[in-house]
Amino acid sequence: MVAKKKKQQHEEYDWLNDPFDEKKIKAEQKEAMSSGTKNALTIGCLLLIMVVFGFGLFLTIQLVNVIAPGY
Image (cartoon, rainbow, N blue to C red):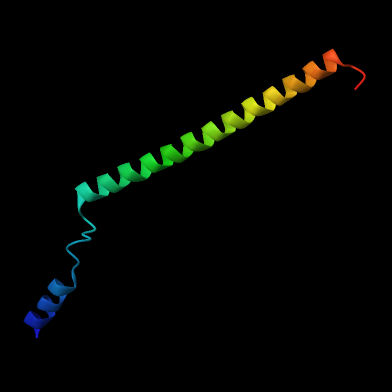
């Protein structure tokens, strides 16, 4: 009975997804951090583009007001 129980526990353990595999855990953490960094850079670049576009639009409107103040 005890041998059967041990055999069952041995078969139930998932060796491919070992929760104590330190190398795999470090690789997953590194991958997770790099994807977060990529997301932050993407959002930052999009915000920068929007700010530059808005500033350009503002300058264009101001230039039009200086050239043709009646319009």
